[in-house]
Length: 100
Image (cartoon, rainbow, N blue to C red; front, top):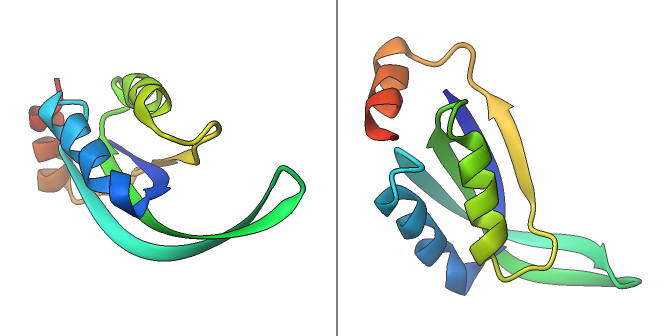
């Protein structure tokens, strides 16, 4: 099991999460509102965003990354991978069963 950490504009996050679960690339997606500060095109930018924690499998992580990159509105979306080595075994099994 792995978790993809993705940030997305507030108005787009639910659509992205829905697509990943509907397409069985993710078992579930948690949403957390946040305020992001970053440098883009030489300027400091402040945006209201949503952090998405996307539960998937190691085998499907590449497909998740590709799908997020394809439909995300940002030119360079934040996509990071966290390996869940110590996940609760029944939860990890559920993730495996939920992702194709």
